[in-house]
Length: 144
Image (tube, rainbow, N blue to C red; front, side, top):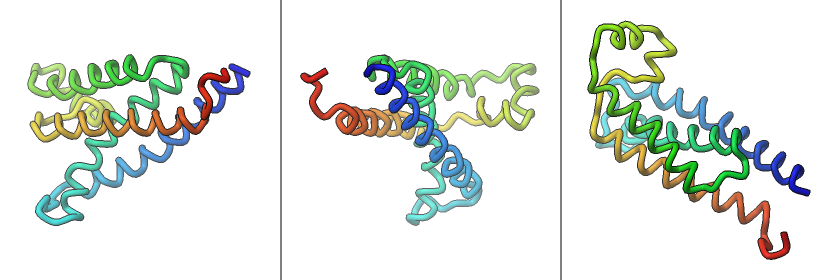
């Protein structure tokens, strides 16, 4: 029974990751020149940064399907906030790494305070999604 439950958790986590990546990449591609005063501009400006912790949370859920959700959100926030605040550090070797397309995308280039709000909001959304999926996968927790 537990193996079947773990498989379902991993499948749902993988599906969320697969959905979040292209949506986040598309949102980031629309970000340059976006006017946050309009709805589409707001979505373009903040969606990618909000989806980033959702992706990390569900990568954690995939890797550790039975982990406590608060542990996962703690790890997610630790990683994403470290990456964000790491953008304030600008040594030559990191600048060189940031020039590499994939690594630069992961590390980021510019620290923006609004990204912190997006990371917190995305982490909260991930927890809510996880709670909903948990309730759907195990509607009677006392039966297990």
